Amino acid sequence: MVYALLSIVFAYECFRKTGLRDVFSMFWAIFFVLGSNMLWMSTSGGSWFLAQGLNLTLCFGAVLSLFYQKKVLCMILLALAIGCRPFSFCLFLVVFIYFCVQEWRISHQRPIIVVFRQMKFLIVPAVIALGYCLYNYVRFDHPFEFGHNYLPEFSGVGNEQFGLQYIAANAYNIFLRPAALLEDASLNLPQFDGFMFYVANPIFIVWFALIIRDIILKKITLEKIMLILGCAANLLFLLSHKTFGGWQFGARYTVDLLPFLLLYFLASYRGKPQKWEFFIGAFAVLFNLYGAFFMHMQIP
Image (cartoon, rainbow, N blue to C red; front, side, top):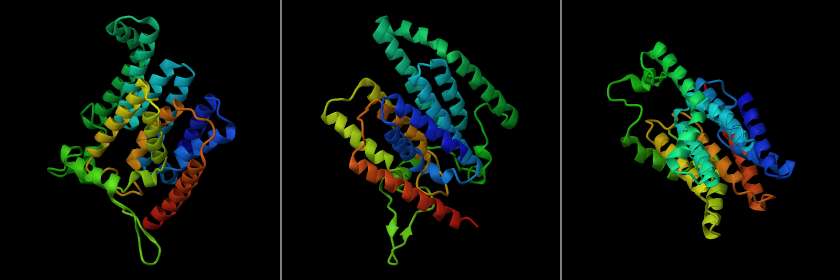
């Protein structure tokens, strides 16, 4: 719950930094965090939820640091986030490329020189990465093993944690697998491997509409393209996971993508949210509140 509240504070400060009114900044912050699977995860102390919650907090903190031009702090927070969710490296890479692009636009130097100059921001993250690798080696005799392969579902022969063979089924589940309305008006929510993630995390619906609007109005910038590609790459890596989150409500792995959306929204400041966005935001919080109760009732 602490991670969820901190994420709300960071997101609120990010939106407020753009000049958005306090009440609307809080609306978006709550929409992003409590209108997603993070609401349910914040009610459980499972280690996998703690990892995702801390990752979200660190990434949102990094986005706020980016707004305050604290580049070193931004990269440190993202490096720490990678220790929680390794695929946050996609966001780390996007932010580093953003630094290089910004420097190139100012200096107009050769790209290789710009990249070399920006590498000073990688020194502390490299030390953090080395610390993680040493820690994993001491625990599991391998610098990149952090315990997942010791879980029952991955310890058997042929039960690889990641593989291309998992992508198609996982993609179908999170893009097309619905939640069914039964005859007694109750919902039948898939409990394994997720269902349509944009229903469990409706902020993605607003993001899709925002991308379409930007394409039509020709407001797609290089930074926005980088965020879209980084988010797509992160999602592809997640889809290669055997279970895409295992036993869950919704598709909680897609919470890892919210920092990309936050940066995109901040780059597309529009003022007061529209009426349909208020409706979607209210639905998002209520649906995830229902999901939290539903999941807790399923746990013995």
